[in-house]
Image 1 (cartoon, rainbow, N blue to C red):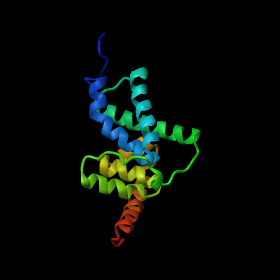
Image 2: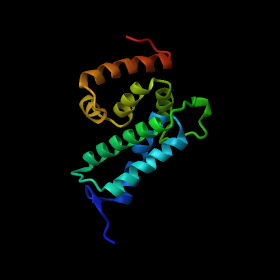
Image 3: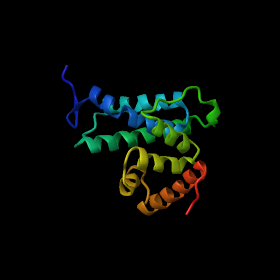
Length: 161
C-alpha cells in the first residue's frame, strides 16, 4: 500500500506532529475531555477519508484547525448540554506547567474569546490568520483579543488597562 502524503508527510507523521494542536482546539472549545477526543478522532478520520489537496505544512495545520472547530460546532449542535468544569472526568495533558496555567485560565474565559486567545497565544496565529480560520472580520478578532486579554487579567488578578 502506498502512503498518501500531505505536504510531504505521511498520515502517521501528520497525526504525530499535529495531535497536540488539534487536541488543544477541541479541549478549549468543548471543555470536556471525552467529547474532545471524539472530535479529535473525527478530524483525523476526515483527513484520511477526504484526502484534501494540501499545498504545504501551514495549509495542513490551517485545514486541521478548521476541521476541528467544525467538528466541535457539529458536536455541540447535536449534543446541546452544559457541563461545568468541575465535572471534567480527566485533566488534559499539557506540555508544560506554563501551558497548563494558561489553559486553566482560558477555560474560565467566555467561549468565543477562548478560541481566539488559544489560537493567538498557544498556536501562534496572527489576527488575519485567526480571522480566516474562524471566518470573522480581522477588526472583530482584534477587539475580541483585547477583551479576552482583559478577561485573562481579571482571572489572574491583574489590573486592566
